[in-house]
Structures are given as C-alpha cells and as structure tokens.
Image (cartoon, rainbow, N blue to C red; front, side, top):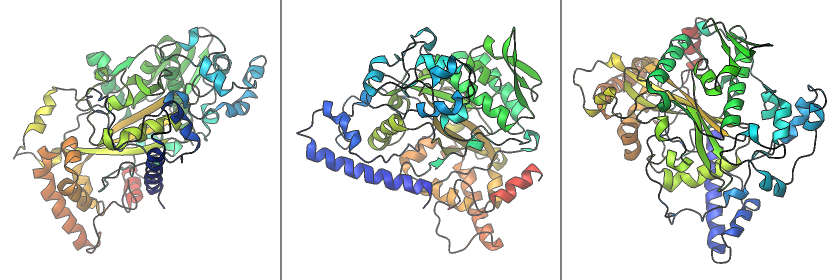
Length: 502
C-alpha cells in the first residue's frame, strides 16, 4: 500500500474513533481532562493538501459542530530528540561532553522551564528548555554546526551531484483527482531536501533583487525565532556541503568566524556577520517558513521566514499568525483539515520529514506576485491570442520537518516551472490534467485560478491525450485517475536522465 494511502486510511480511522470517544464522554469529561486523551487515542495523522498559504481571513472563534472538542495542546509536547545526544557527545571535549550526557528533565519540570515564545535563547538561563526537551545549557554546549543528521535521527545526504548538468529538477507533476486531504503526502527522501539545478545563479540573483525591492514582504523574523533561524541555516549549509561538496565548503577563520565558500557564485559568506535568514537568501534558492510553538496555548505560529515565491500574498501579511489563520482562505481547511493539522504539528517527530506538491498553470514564469501585482491582470480574462508556448505548469514542491533542537516546524518550498508543452510526451499526464481542470472540485479549482488559460490548455491536452493513445503511449481503456507513480509518471526517469545529458 502506498504511503499516501496509508496516511489517509489512518486519518479516517483516527477521526472515526475520536468522534466516537468524544460522543461517549462529552458530558463526563471536562476540558481540562481532554489533554489526557492523547494516551488512549490512536496516533494516526494526516496533513493538509493545501496550496502554498494564501492571504488570511479573520479567525472564527466558534468551533464547528462537526469537529472534536478543543484539545489542550499546551500540555502536549513534540517527541524529544534528547536520546540522540549520546551519538554526538563523543565528538566533544570536557566539560561540554559531560553536559551533553546529563539526564533530561521530567515532563513537569519541562513545563515549568519551557522557553517563552518571544525569548532569545542567548539571554535565557541554562535550565530553560525548548519544546523538544533540550536545555539551553546543552544547546550552548553543542555550539555552532553540530551534527544535525544525528540529532534529527536520519542519515546525511549522499554527495556528488553536478549542478550544471541538472537542467531541471525531478519532473514533479503532482496531480491528484481526489478530494481527500492528505493523499498527496509522501515520506521525504533526505537526499532531495534541497535540490539545486542549472538556474541556481540566476535564481539567487532574482531572490536578492526581490528582497531589495520588497524588504519585509519577503524576509521577516520576530523575537524568539533566533534559535530556529540559526538552526535552520546551519542545517541547510551542512546539507549543501555534504550533497554538493564540489561547490560548497566551510572554513573557520580566527578573526572572521565561520565562512561559507560558494564556488557557483564565486564568493564567500561570512556567516557570523549577518542574520541566518540572509545567509539563506544569498545561498539557498528555497523558501522557508518557521512555525514556533507558543507555550501559552500549544499552537504553532509563523515567527520567521524568507519567502520569495508567493502568489497572491506575502510574508508581511502572515508573520505572527497562528497556523489556522495562515491557511484561512484555503478551501475546506477549517471544516476538514484544521483539527488534523494542529494535532499533526503537535506530534511531528524530527526524524520523519514529509513532502508534497501543489500545482497551478501560469502565463510565463511569475515567481513572486503580491496582491495588485501587474501580472495579476492575466488572471482577469481569457486572451484569445495567448500562445500555448507562454503557459507553464508551476509546481511548488514542499517539505515539512521539525528542527531537533528548537522544536520549530519548518515549511520550505520552491517554485518549479515547466512549459505545458512538455506534458505532451508524458504518458497519461495530459488526460489526467484535463480531467482535473474539467471535473475538479469547484472550490479548489477556483482557488487554483486556472480559468484564464483553460481555453488554450484544454484543447491541447485533449489532442495530446488522443495522440498518446494512437502512439501506444497510453492505454485506450485506462480509467483516468491518480497515477500509481505520482508525483511522477511512467518513464519519468528516462526523460529526466536524458534532459541531464546522462
């Protein structure tokens, strides 16, 4: 059974059992006692298949009748990664080694010493703890650039990829003809967390220009995010140096501190001289959003990010919001996904990152399109003279992971553009895309906003579907449905390898 199907099955079972328990105990169980349900309820989880978060709406305070009663998330902590300290302690000298091998706090002590949402870890006492159970004393003993692969509980990436040969990232075509949230989720293969391609230099330049023009609309951070930003930046740089050692390496200078050497950009980044998010902006062509747990209520809030690939919204309108408010206008989010998302965030372990993709169709290749951007004019009408060559499949390939030390949850994604004409030789993809455009759930298709180019794309997809049947690339009797290979298609590896030149 595919991982995504398992996620859905577990989620359905979880919701059914949860509702049954809630109905039986509604009168007898107080809100305070609800926090203990975590010990008797199944641990099935699912995640949203929502698109990259769009502009928010005001949160509704009334709890819908079709969701379980409120849960006391402030009493639910994410899985601790403290048991990984023994894996890295051997690399340290005394007294740091002794500090790293000390026993952890009890859950009661953790609650009493949890770090406040807005606190800078550098100014906290040694006994203050992060949600994942690490004390500030332990975090400082680990120092800069600890072994995050061991701390996260998964192996590091394999190196050796040649970026200049990577004409295109893996050809993700994440189209699902379903209305079931969670089906698009798959386990993240750690090798592909940060995937670079031949557009690297141009994309970094574009992102830096976007920040110079828009400032806080694309990069922002709030008090309390210092540890998460530092941890994310160090993890990302460690990954790049391990995955692409011929292009990135680190040194430490006695006077300048840690230095990242970037052979693609032919420059050096003095890491200690700038904010961690600026280090990412200037070296990693990915968007990152850091969600931090608020100990007052246990919910997660967007506290920092660098996001240059937003369509119809911007980071400035989202920073500081709770998870549900970030996803406010997403179809069916509040009714079908809010509870599952909140519970998933409360339980997500650092060792199990996930990935998914959302897609849309765009004229040209707009990377960043805030509200009232001139490019929005293309979405207001159907241009009869629009050439098919200008239409692109945009895929926002997304990953979700918990950082081991801070306990922050990081949502990262990048926009990938493929000329829609490339779908012509991808078996079954034209037929599937056509079915989604014509028969997809109305609210979701309105959210994707593909109407402005459907008059150009749909006839082409219909013709390509028939052409594939005539050429024997597609079975005439095939029932149009989500592909077993999703988010890829039959024969994708051969096509991708051919594009890379090997």
